Image (tube, rainbow over all chains, first blue to last red; front, side, top):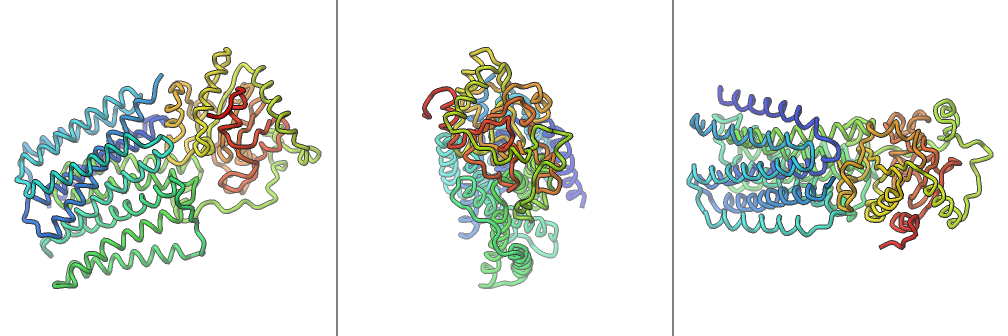
Length: 91
Length: 477
């Protein structure tokens, strides 16, 4: 039970801290911000990797592999497109 | 539960993620933050592989390389005009990954001991599935492949209810049945959220896309966070919560800039067409007398295109301060390079040239900024609504390029229209307004724009790429 409390605590604290920080992001950077947070949501790839630490049947293997393909697309593509946009901004 | 030092390492990586997002204040710092976060992400990946014995390494590695290379190639090659669709697709991919992993986790939970795990895995399937299909539909709409709007009243509500019921039923079956029904129930559990996401995205119309895309951004984060609770993974929870926060903020900012509730945007299928007798002369007098089309002015004969162009060039030549207001029409006509060279030319002539960008101009948060940055417009020349709105009154010329609703004075002067009360860029307060729109049809809201009949407006209708180029005596590239 303490474990679920710890997890909910991490969720709540991170949400609040991020909310405070992200509220101050200027509108001009909203698109890169969205691309960046997209890339971060590829964190689910860690979950996909951990699937393979247990015994996987064929179905789980296929689903897990598909998840890794999607998450890797999101991860590398997300970071790359964020940087590409930020490079364009000049002042 | 992890060992305490593993938890500590996780918390450090999480802190670096948060530190990275805190850098999004200036482009330069944001690049640094992105790089640091990418490194931390790589470290997190390496840690997971190092701490655990990951089986099927060939499959895992091949999947990573295939997805990663595809992601890199697409994002390096895509043109900036198609960035909104790409971002939607990447978001969908993240949601899809969470859907699939949550589904496998759901198959592994042992009930009734792990009811919490089952619940959060189900939540991951639901939210991840909605993010996946919603984003794919959004991407198709953003890339102009799909133009479907609400048709049958009530049909969407029924479809949403049906999808939710289907999900509940399929989930209950998936957790109880055995044998050959089990995979069927699991497939149905995954398909119901996909249907739900498709319905949600289909009913949201063009100019409301910034809200939809921000919301789906939040969903893909939440899906990861739910999966994190289901699998007791702090990194997933924290990173997912960050993305959820960011998407929520963007959603609220966009909805506020439209003066509508998120719920109304998602369920209303877009603003209803304005009631026809929306003449601004009733309430507009005191606030903006110049926008009042007097009866003798309303049917004024429009000057010929060449006369209007001459007039516009004259106004620009005599102006010392100019504000350019870009809108989705600029993106559609891909006129950002022409707009940028117009701005350059004018500022080389010693004029003060600034850009005013409405929060919901375009199809995603920050859309205009990215396009103008691509065309080499100086970052410091891009002003947000509140920073520049008071300056219109002292500005000689406002140039509106492909924008209607976000500069529609009816939002201030006419009550009870779909945009009444929506904060607008007050371009109509400038001494002269040059309108480079496709035609004089109302914007997405359907509310007629009094700017088109205002005597101080110079109307250059047609493709913005050409009309803007003609202002500097060039031909569209």
